[in-house]
Length: 146
Length: 184
Image (tube, rainbow over all chains, first blue to last red; front, top):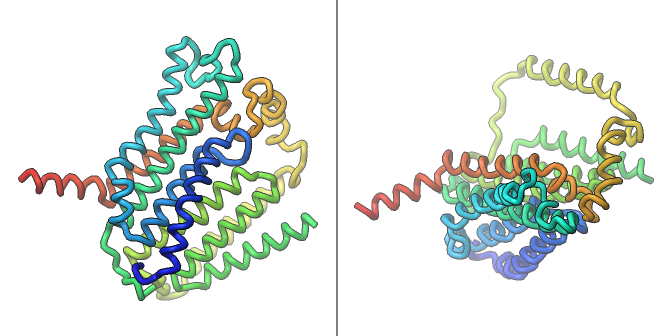
């Protein structure tokens, strides 16, 4: 898409705000619609848009596939690890109230924050990984045939 | 007013679905299915289910379309015409549709406060979550705390989907092959 000047300029302008919005949806999910799943998808969209317009090689420099695959696992481990941590504090699995026994609500806030972060990381990484897997194969259709 | 909005959205849904059926050009079909998702998102907004609408717009209209286009780039642009008319699929579809419509007759009325979904757990969540969890968005409270196990399961499912795609269409295998060549 080297010849599409408008698309390139607009994409450059949009990628930053998209990532910012993803972070807002991620960390403001306790107060407004949204959460880890939506934030992860929006975060991945920034990279996918960049990849569509500037080419797969460019976006792979920013977010290399080996790192994407690691992040997909880190998110799940973060979520499951939160449960293990509450087990180690002597409570049930994923019972966030155990984190701060004096203020169960604070524990719940921390737990939800960490767990949603885990979901967000996994979803973002998985979406980018699936996009890489599809886009890395040689296409049958050329740019003009669409 | 709400009835008017619902009627408009639903009739646009039907029109989009019919257009998808008639189309043979797959690029247009992908775009129309994205429109379909956006209309569904609007319907969820009128039902005050903003979180679901958000997900539908981001996943259904956004990511799915990109993945469909990616698949199209690897396969073909046009749907193959069926060779001859066969009545069996039509019978199956009509019969299933009739059974589904018959099933909805027993369901509680639209927006009824006595429906099982509203009567049991929902009221408990709504009244308890400010003291239990103290998060203003009840949906987040249910997803991440009350139903934490389910969400963990969903995250694992997403991760498994990633592993499956990588196993099926490259990524991992190709990288390993490249590394193998370098070590040789």
